[in-house]
Image 1 (cartoon, rainbow over the protein chains, first blue to last red):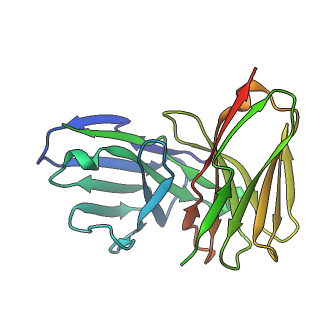
Image 2 (image 1 turned 60 degrees about the vertical axis):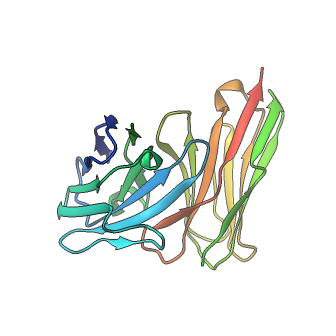
Image 3 (image 1 turned 180 degrees about the vertical axis):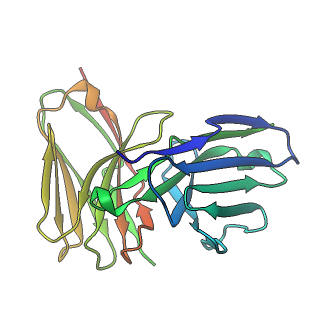
Length: 116
Length: 111
């Protein structure tokens, strides 16, 4: 079945540095992927829609210059957290869909980011 | 703005009991999703409901959708401990796969 993979699964970075998270659709092409952020014991909050070959669409309140999204191919979207701060520490999850699976939306395994 | 409300947010129940989680949403939509999340893990897809009156069952879980009432339910039958998890409903308002989540229901089943 369809699989969405994220890398890295866990990352620790220092304040002020940047970190990149990858989201790959392993056996299907995804023209659109979505990025979510989840703080502990909270729900998933949509950050942005990643469109292949074009600019991402950000949700209200999400800083596009801080959370850079690139969707360079039909199987890869990347989220770069720039100038990371401790409050950016969170669980980041991407999703993608394939029509072959009856509109099921698949989520990646998630990436834990800790900024120290 | 689409709002998705779940209740209860926390549920502690005994094994073998039945219970229902409710998901209300604020807009017309005929696409609703239920997910399970275990601590420290990502989401596991449980059900995709794509039309009014849709009902799906898998094991002890059954989900239904009433688009006129803007309500979905997740019913748990004869709960067992391994169903303990957080359950999220999510709604796709514009049929573009951009789904908005409810706050989740943390289910704790006591042995």
